[in-house]
Image (cartoon, rainbow, N blue to C red):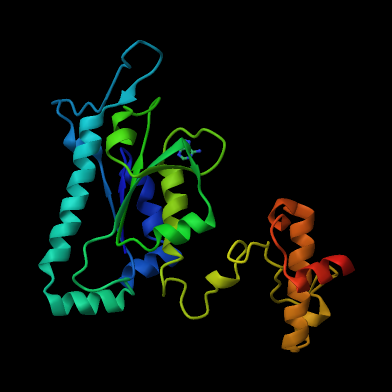
Length: 266
Ligand code: ADE
């Protein structure tokens, strides 16, 4: 999968690309990522990319043309790379990267604007976005962005929460991170995206590692018992307990018979 970020601050992403799971995913060629600066597409010799809003008002808005051209350039670059692969190479790449669909399929692409007026970002959305071949995340800055970007360029606007940040860079990292870990192979064989909170719509049970005792606090005996069935039962119970306490809204769905039984007991 390819993730392109369009941002006035490419340096923000340096640490993100060069650490931990994202770094390994890039090295393993499960994921490829890039940042493009709309300033490179400024129509002004001073590199200006913002201007005052029509109708008046405080602050500056990012102009549409540099954003459109930055997005069009990342689309074009990906398309020509994709088409440059011959069919056999493409089949291999698609197979290796676990891309969905047939080797000579059209590129499936989603262009997303990061903004507080968007639809809320969820695990389900991350899973959906991970099925595209190319994801383009557009970051706003200053007091906002010319609305024609949202109207005519992007497929959707996504918000990471009900608060306003100074720019779309942190939200783009949040989305890229959540999407990347849903790509098959990114978490490795032992990585458990399936067991996470929100895969099942329940909070995850508490987890512990060594030492077994720390400052008098011990690890629950059952987790050290080696009895897999009891461990699974304990985890399900704790998971339901935690969800009822912290996120009761997640239990407002049709529950399984087993879940109803456990909830009655705890
Ligand atoms: N840009 C500024 N605030 C944001 C938010 N909450 N979500 C996504 N993008 C944003």
